[in-house]
Each structure stands twice: as structure tokens, then as C-alpha cells.
Image 1 (spheres, rainbow, N blue to C red):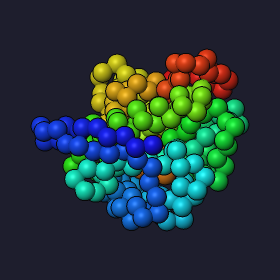
Image 2 (cartoon, rainbow, N blue to C red):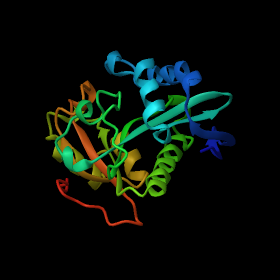
Image 3 (cartoon, rainbow, N blue to C red):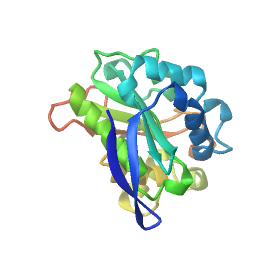
Image 4 (cartoon, helix red, strand yellow):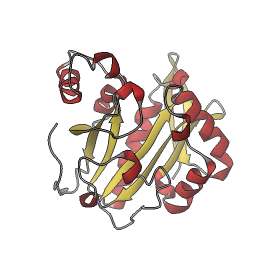
Length: 229
């Protein structure tokens, strides 16, 4: 899969390419992670070459990067799971095999997002949305029921003395508050299903995440274990 497109960067069209990543890209992908998730995000949660090697070997269709200006500016990784085995209260570590995706299940029903990131200089360009839309196309191409993933809620730490994680999400959905990750995912067509506590070691989110779904419109996905937010 190779997709050429134009981003809108600094007010000007910029040609970009979305493609599967490979071993030659590993250092560029690690550099993207460092730029996307600076401290206090735990450094041990950033990609390492052993994890990236598993992505490429086990599910290359779910290992995507986007190039522009001669370098990798973002990436997105997924795996396929049978969602009935996990449920709404899963953790990132459990459902992604701590990022190694050795639990990838080709016969599963759900493409689960392991990670998405775009370096700060290109976050207003549409690069992240195009990565997400490309992964939706993968869901349709493979005949899966849905795309699912836990969205960080990095604005929550500043509001945690005012609201529970569930109330925080409701306030974002009502427009009272804004959260950069949740709002981005809403713009990409993702729908919130539930809040997962102790999802990921993430100080800004107080360990919480919003489980958000995109359903394949050409199928009728099963909904066992999915609860409205």
C-alpha cells in the first residue's frame, strides 16, 4: 500500500506519502516517538527496535508511516484482536502485548490502535487524520467489524480536582472543555464508548483513556462488552 496525498502545511500544499514502514525506517520512527511524547511521558513506553520488528513481521498492513519533506513525520500502528477476549476495562499493555503485538490474531474482528503520533511541526497539516483514515480503509479492506483504541486524555490532570474521568469526557463532548487527543479523535469520526482506568502509565491522563471506536459501515459489528461512555 502506497498513498500519495497533499497536506496543508504552513498554509501551503505539501506532498506526502503514506506507506508501510520497514527496518530501514526504525530510527526515524523512534525519533518521531521522542518528538511526540516528551517527558513526563515514560521513555520506556517509546518504541524500540524489537517492538518495531514485530510490527513489520506480524502485521505489516497495520504498520504505517507518513513521509514529507524527505523524512518520516508520523506513524500509526495497529494489530487485530478478537475484542470479546478483552472487554472495555482492558489495559494498553494487555491488549497490545506491551507494544510487541505477539497476540496479533489474523482471525479477529477488531483492528486495535497501538499508537499514533505526528511530530509537533506537522500536527495542523492533516497528517494524523490521513493516517487514521488510511487505517479505516484497512479495516474495510480486511472485512473487520471496527477500529478501536484507547485515546489519551492529556488535559485531565489539570481538571482532575474538578471532575471524574467520566465527567471530564462528558464535558469535552458537551464543548465545555477541550482535550487535544479526544477532540482530534472525534474529528476523525471516532465515537467514545467507555473510560478505561489504569490504562497506561501517563501522568497527564492520570492513567485514564477513552476507548473510542470507528465501525465499519459495510458490516454490522458485534457489540458485546461495549458500554456507552
